[in-house]
Length: 234
Image (tube, rainbow, N blue to C red):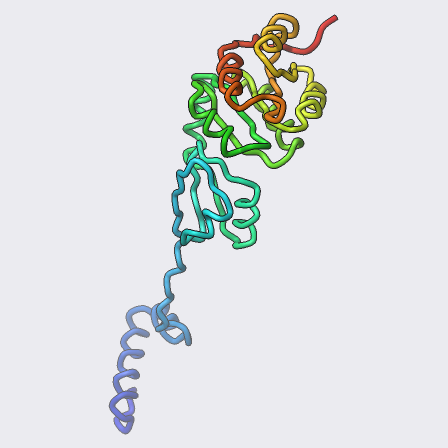
């Protein structure tokens, strides 16, 4: 029974409680919780910023206002200093349309170009080569791992690796039986690699080849169609 000596606010609350108790006891219990009337603020959604510059360096990233997450175009090269900067700033990043690109690779079987040195100039050269997708890698170990993975999955026709330690990359990649890695400097090397070992991984040192010759070398290599190999045979 509602007591008539309550003040107006208490009286109204008592009426509401009494009505809710009769209609919906669960609703009454929820209203009696201390935080029942609090409005929960929506959690902030992370905005993703798209970047499609040919090459992203630390200096470039510092010059723009970045969101807490960025998406990078497939053709964009992310330099090691840029990667370190994103890591320090706790900015997450990912490649755009990875699934679509994977399907494209499997259909058209282009070549993969893994760049460890002279990234900016080599990336611009690779843009003029058909069926060649460039990607910046941070170490010889990463280049070897990617090359082996791409060859074993048959996701690419072949792999080009540009590294100042190209002999090391070739030697380590050849530990996988399906990989036939060679070091080349000119068209004669490319022709010999095709005829003698059916090479599917070509390692190039930018220091030993003039840049004006690298594009022609890339084009000559990417015209090749190495046959799938199960391994070296006697």
